[in-house]
Length: 220
Image (tube, rainbow, N blue to C red; front, side, top):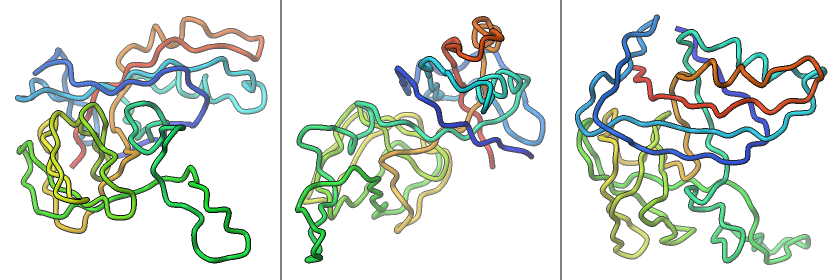
């Protein structure tokens, strides 16, 4: 089964949410399944692209517009208020504090990945993860990830840098201690509103695609 990497281009807004327990859908080719229905909700990622002015040289927008017939994408979430480490003020990240001559003691805007510190089974709602090195920066409303799935934090408590969180949606696969806890996760889904995305397309080389709505797909 082919899974496409969603292209990186400037966006204006991005929101991951879990709107309900089911929707009208079906099966995709190659073993990816729409959640129809899924007890506990399903994931949706909404993206509002910014104006793209490089279409003549790199026709990414038209490429995305051509992939709306059930193709599956993996989308790396862009920095947003839902991404814990991406706060510009008071950001807690790893500082350049390594004793080298070029160290400026300032925080750098890089990705930080925690680790899951306890096993959790597919279908459950609670996870435990370790944020040693960055501190307890994750709170309700943030999104974390495991493999290529996203989870919204509903509740969280800390014992030092160890977090215990209740999430939605239910876990899509088993978690093992030591697995990566992504603070800038990936989302796996398909575009559900192709006609809206295509509507603004033109031949002038600069355009703003319509809002892109991706519904979660499960990939074994």
